Amino acid sequence: MVSGKIHRVACCQLVELKPDLFEVLVDNGAEITLEDCQAFDQFWQQHCPFPFDILVDANREYSYSFGAALSIGSLPQQRFVAVYSKSHSAISAQQSAVSVNQLNYPDKQVQMFAERSPALNWLEAVRQRLTIAGMG
Picture 1: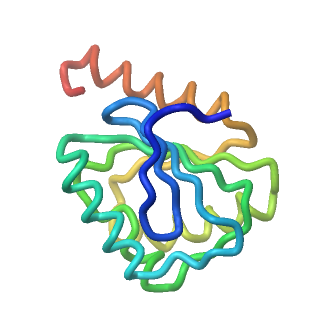
Picture 2: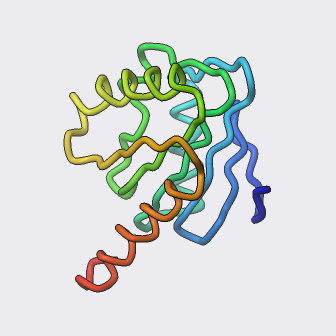
C-alpha cells in the first residue's frame, strides 16, 4: 500500500513519499502524451524545484506516444528513476521507452526491477551515496 500526499497530474497519481521522492502510478489503459509530459514538467517545476527521484509502478497497462517517450525525464533536476513490474512485457516496454529517452538524456540513471521493495531500496542506496558525497 502506498502512503503519502497524492497529487493528480494528467493520467497519473504522483505520491509524495518524501519531499524529493515520488511514486508514479499511471492510470490503467492510459497513453502518456507529450501534453502529459508538459503537465508533469510544470508540476515538478512548481512543487519540486530541487533534485528529485522517481519510483514508477509499471504493473498497470499503459503506453507512451513517441513524443512523450522523447520528452519524459527532460528536467535536469530529475536524478534517478526506478521502475518496477512483475510483468516481463511491461519491463520490456519500459526498457524500450528508456532506450529512446536516453538518446536525448544519456546521463539519466534508470533501473528496472520485478518488485517495489528492491526498486525503493536501490533509490535509497543511490540517494544515500549522493548525501555521503555531499551532492544530495
